[in-house]
View 1 (cartoon, rainbow, N blue to C red):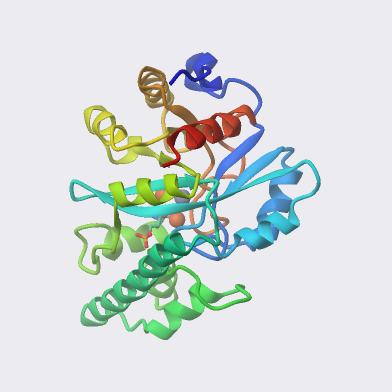
View 2: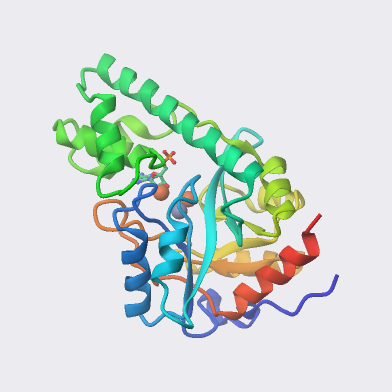
Length: 298
Ligand code: AMP
Ligand code: FE
Ligand code: FE
Ligand code: ZN
C-alpha cells in the first residue's frame, strides 16, 4: 500500500509543518474535561482552526452535540480516546472516524465506562481507609457537573477534585502524586481493552486508530512493536512531547508508513495546563487518516 507522505514529514525541527489547522485531541465534560462539547467547538473556531476531533475517554456521548455546534465548513471528526492495555502497560488509543451508533463499539464503551465506575468505588474505599472522607456520590456529582445527561466517564481527575475539596491535597498534581498515580496508595488499575480488540473494532467500523502521547510511557522499541498491532498513526504533536521526542516520533512514523497526528489534549482549567490548539496538524492529516482507515477496513 503506498500512501502520500504525512504533512508532518516536512516539519522543521519537529514542530508543526504549517499553521495548526486542526486539533485532534480534545476533551469535554463527558469525560474529564470541564467544557460542554459545544463550548469546545466554539473555542476551536475562535482559535482560528478549521477542524477538530472530540476525544473523550471511553465515550462518544459528546459527539452529536459537537457535530451540531460545528459551523459550515468546520470539520468535527467523531472520535474517542480508548483505555487500552498492552504488555501490562496502560496505553491510550485515539480512535478517529468512529461510528457512534455501532453496537459492538457501544458495547465495549459501556463495559469500559462501567469498569471506570467500579474502579472509582474501589479508589474511594482506599481513600477512606487512608483517612480521606470522600464519597462515591461526591465523585459522581463532580463527574456529572455541567453534563446534561447522566453517564459521564468517571476518571481520576474527578476523584482528585473530591480529595482537594476535603483539603487532603493542594491541587490536582498533588492529588495524583500523593494518592492517585500508579503505585500510590489509592491507585487501582483500570479495566482496559486489549490493543488487538480496540484495533479490530475500530477498523471494522471504518475508523483509524492512533497511539496517544507515546513518548510519555513507551520506549522507541516498544512503540515500534506496538505499531505492528495494526496502528494507523502516532500522535507526534502533543504538548508533553519535547522537540527532540517529536523529531524522533516523526522519523518513526515516516519509517513505518504511519500518519503523524497531533492535538493539545485540552481538558480546561484546573485539569491540565494544555491550551486548546497548542498542538495540532494540517487538515490534510485528516484525509490521510481516512485513507488509512479505508485501506484497513475488514
Ligand atoms: P483515568 O483515565 O481515570 O486513569 O485518569 C487519567 C487522566 O487523568 C488523564 O487523562 C489526565 O487527564 C489526568 N492525569 C493523569 N495524570 C495526571 C497528573 N499527574 N496530574 C493531573 N492530571 C493527570
Ligand atoms: Fe484526561
Ligand atoms: Fe491520554
Ligand atoms: Zn487525552
